[in-house]
Image (cartoon, rainbow, N blue to C red; front, side, top):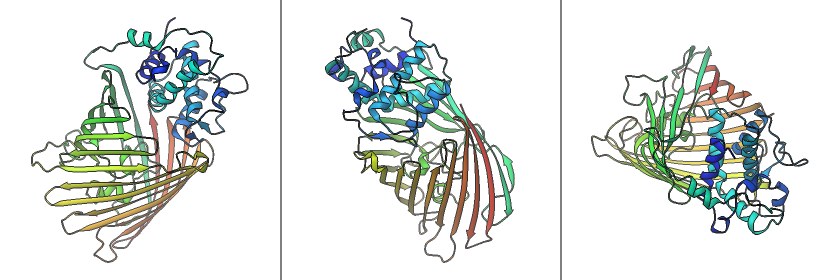
Length: 466
């Protein structure tokens, strides 16, 4: 039977992680596996309607008019689902894509690939359960072992396999009803764009090159064209290793692209302390080095060593830096209580002097409501004797599937030894999602600047993803 490229990629990717007892089970059988069959089983961590995996499944199934499951058990997108149920929905979705010969966009293919990586373990276990427990599965249409033999990876070209291009573009306008001393001015522009080229060089060997076309083409430092460029491998179970120019694992908010944060601007601490520059409007958090990350059920962590020279800079001084972050999820076995994350990050580096940054972050999500916060403390800010700190607390409420309300308290002090030199930003915002890849962000910011004139600004930002 003819297989679509995407469905075959899903099966091949999953085949590498199946347990021994599932070797004789065809994943095609899982397409017809009822969600009800896992109701009494261990469901694992649940996804509520606010979780990114939940929203992605809902958006893709809605976009292509695909009804998942059998009559009476369709995925309606209103009730929490377990990881096992999400795994079955994903495989059902891929089966429908194959059967109905649906043409997915490159963006949706990328989203489904991320879901495949997230839920690969559950699908592997469930395919074993089909063979061992579910007597209703009577016909085996193939075997994973045969699939493995038929799909051994080879070097395809200079670009490798699974080559794809994703990214996004922002357009924004900032109005200044009251202009102050915080460096903002009325303007219209393209503040950020992103073009990511990724693929697979070989089995367990991936590459990413991420460009920012709206930055200065001639600048080879912080504002240069290249944001990330690395090779990664997942050959170690539950771990990934990276080498190249990578986002350092420090600062929870600073790990996110400009296309993925909830507000138009990063918090003051993220955009100033991470890159050690008071004039920055986004954190330059990339550096050349080696990093390892692990993801277990209750704990996720990353640690790396870097050349300490910043974006797009070679190591000319042998001044290395070390960065690490750990996040614990205490409620991972009790998803009905919500999702709680607690964590910390550390950055130690030698530049012309010693810099140390310590951060703490937390996040709690319950149904449509989320509250999160982060505290960053840096010794060696601007000069060796200067200590700065900043923190924020923000809340988010999904009023509907398209409308999100936000509020933030954001405090920054560039020198804790000096008096009245800090600033506080009070932010209120609303995000509207036209489609799953097109949104509008509106932020009102009131700035209380203790060392200069206060200001008000209203920001409008629209962004499209592809």
